[in-house]
Image 1 (cartoon, helix red, strand yellow):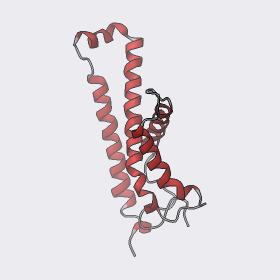
Image 2 (image 1 turned 180 degrees about the horizontal axis):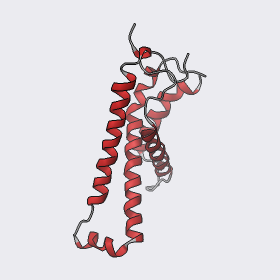
Image 3 (image 1 turned 120 degrees about the vertical axis):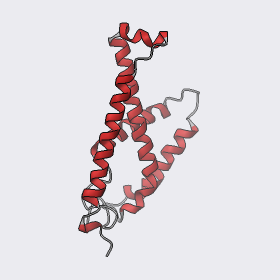
Image 4 (image 1 turned 90 degrees about the vertical axis):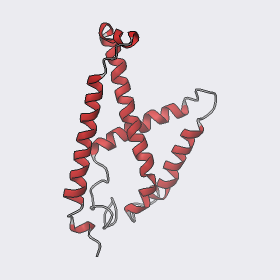
Length: 153
């Protein structure tokens, strides 16, 4: 029996997502959680309340058992995981942009004057997303698909 999931849906003892997506998800989760509890308008954000409710309600049964019965029980949380990962990527690139403006203000003046010099961040984003796509393609079609533990019997 596996701590990660049941045969047919996932390879035992291998996470569903790779470490890059998990890292971005963790960053996104903590940034969104801090934004949610900051109460910028005097109350909790309804959208954040929905997202975190969805996340914790779907995962609640998994918190109370030692091992997961099936990976399929957590599929309902996948949209929220991807949302957190996307917000993590967004926050990291936004932080890098702010860092660039602070450390190189003479180069960042082009942003205010209308000369957009954003080719490097866009190129970095495309390289990152391309690398993640290749990583997940390899995981899905070269590792997960031919594995005997995921074959339906």
